Length: 277
Image 1 (cartoon, rainbow, N blue to C red):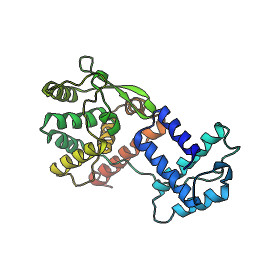
Image 2 (image 1 turned 120 degrees about the vertical axis):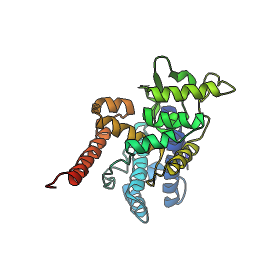
Image 3 (image 1 turned 180 degrees about the vertical axis):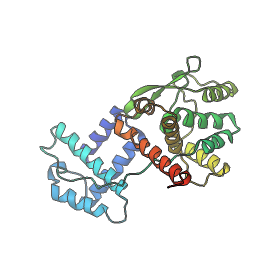
Image 4 (image 1 turned 90 degrees about the horizontal axis):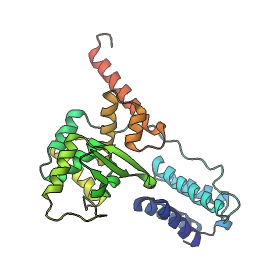
């Protein structure tokens, strides 16, 4: 795909972008190269070319997928401008598709408890308790190391997107589950070793399996448990800024999605309960 793409991908790696993110960027830029008929030569790519490519994406793809690909191109060409490889980005004036506002999918408190408590193996119970009890992203959980957990002080040092660190309190249930799992292992991991040597996909399958076992029909993922964590905190009176810090959101607007969840729930309660509804 060319030196410019390789330089960009190496830059993302140095920034701490996840393997999944870098893989997506490589694939998106590969699609642009294929559309243009060969290696990407940034100085030869004009706005008309990228507009035709973006227009081709609208065939059979969801707006969210198109938006991600357009974001990839904007980031790529913006990087090249900063490096002096091109004078201006051909993506100037190319807008992202409008995305429908989605209310995060979450579980009720009883559903979340039933899912987590259905896990009997110590490892699985610890995984589910941390996902729901600490609101971790699945990649954050998969990369968690033993030295990043302080069971006595009851906190976890989490490395989030862009390798940004944050401290997350660990509740009593998650603490006991993790402590039991760590004590049960025959071999203690050395420094730098992951607590759960599992892939993201394996953890996703694990969550889906326990959701089905709990009789939860709705699609349930590790991110569903993260959404449930935030929603249940908000319902219990937690401050939005505090939830933002716990989730590791860089923008409060991202966290504010959960206020829509609560409003929707209030409307449902009103419709079911009020005699004049």
